[in-house]
Image (cartoon, rainbow, N blue to C red; front, side):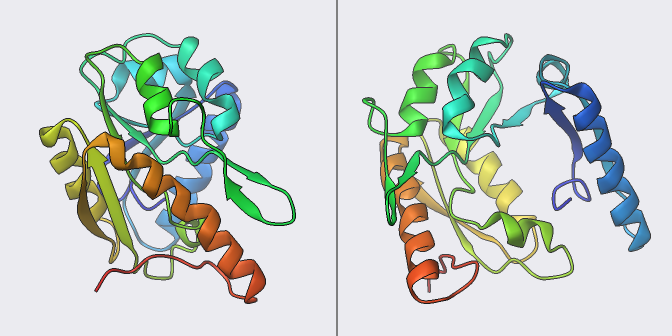
Length: 199
């Protein structure tokens, strides 16, 4: 909903009908607010084939299965907002042996894929509340400087989001680990949609 007013968006899913339904809901909702948009649905492989930038908006537990079923990531910018977490009385960071979800994903992708970590610390509820401004800071890291700049431009095109260069992909573990911290702060202080804002 946030991106399709600026970019041609394709929503992918293992269930193509679900992706198409989501895209139709997005178009209907935005047009009802007088906003023009470009959004369509399809299967994961179909969407990957036609995309220049791919956002892996999936839980960590589904990452390996999803990526291994797809081909054609070469040359594409792949954004990971994935946060490996667990819960036991509180939320905690639970990274794989590679040290971060991003490093794990890097090992699954072909070398030619251009991996960027971004959008990790924004509550899903805020993404969906399109009548409200998103006024968060977004840390972005990658080993590909051009891909990082492209993603930072995407971030800065959405509401009041502000992108910050957080360095190489090795910083991903720090960015990912902020999300369970935010969830704990929200839970134990009876707050909602806690986020990050650099000043």
